[in-house]
Length: 126
Image (cartoon, rainbow, N blue to C red; front, side, top):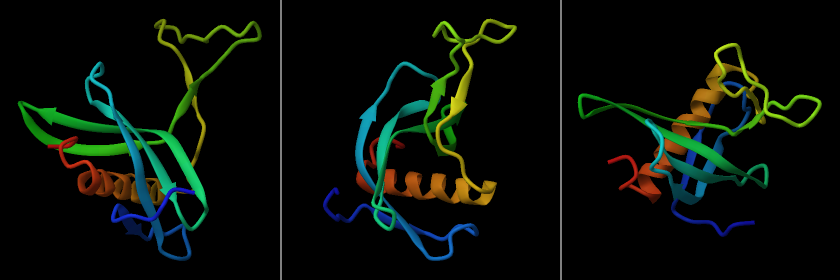
């Protein structure tokens, strides 16, 4: 289990009966995508769980930051032969690896991750 640090950010989504804290354990920058800033490893001490590859995004319009969010990992959808499936437009298809019981819980998780990134790695979302 990662050591405790000052990067713990409490949240309380409706679907979680007690306050939940997340800790940003690691951040890996990524420069090749439009909104994607990088990937975080997020530890949830109450569950003893660490989620890796949490995508951290930031959207800008005309050079001004208009939003930031975090999303859980996805994996490619494979056909029976192990080839990545594609939609009618030829784009790769993905499926979620983690789901939340309601949109409020997902938003609270995203908000907590972004708050943690701003504390632990302030240069990322500058």
